[in-house]
Length: 404
Image 1 (spheres, rainbow, N blue to C red):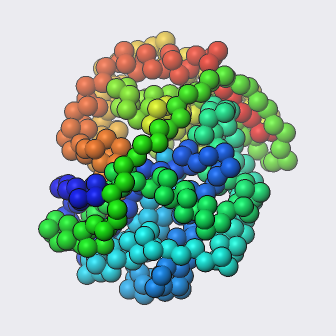
Image 2: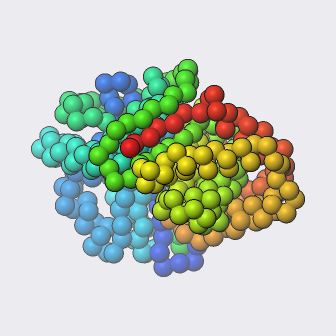
Image 3: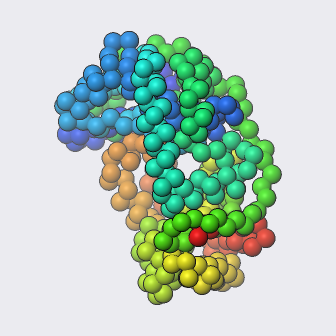
């Protein structure tokens, strides 16, 4: 794995992989939390409309440029980042990098396309409203981060979407797309020297710009218990708290604790108690999201409305266990081995690897080797899990949202 910095401050990272398929992406340290109140949804909207035409391509030609050779072009927006990336046959590296640079640098945002895409995003918003198991996460973040930009829904609102114009899009990009906050990430069958050559050719002419705007990091968390009446077959419940940021020294312990409680494995504590032993839930999961200056931990499950109180008692019982009973040597060993195995397997997905190393360089300006990550996991002590659990699962500081 090699890194390099272009003269304009854009960082690049590449891992060579002898494969017929390669992956390239541009990651930008800008997301919905960087929007002003009257811009809510614009970061996500930009992700949509950069594909709608450039100075030399129409939307049709942008899509076909990659898809005609069997590749895939994609993008996403989160609270703190935007990514545009492609997967393609390795012989089309230059084609893919040129295309992504074109849509990021030379998009023209035609008025007709903007109006059409506004309707598409409004339909996306409406589809979320029809899906309580997804909508509940957005509303829960509004509870946790009330009054803070992170609380806002990434998709925005139909009312604000209708106000966006080419001028407002260019203004947001000019104020938030800084070269020192951009990473070009690659995993594939190309030499580092050739990757640097393409990076300089297609991204080197972007004028250097350094971020000076500070992110707002002040908010007053007030726990809340909220029950919302919904016309649904199931009750949906989410319970959680603010948690360590991505820069916290407790971050790895937080990841391990989350995996123990409700990670992706079927033998997580919450899956065992709610689904396997009591048959109360089809889907139960916990999640930890670290942000620049804070974080969020939550547990979600859906169950029959008659079972909601009993399910909550079972979840809270698991919280008490992990708060009060230090994990034994064997338990810790198993938990660590499970997480290490999951992380190792995840690197086999090279698209995920490309995004992962890009994000690591973007946020931490380094990429730890698997060996370093495994060593950090092995060094976690039971008392660290106990301490974090007692902070997270303090009843007086936990928030809960129920749709029923």
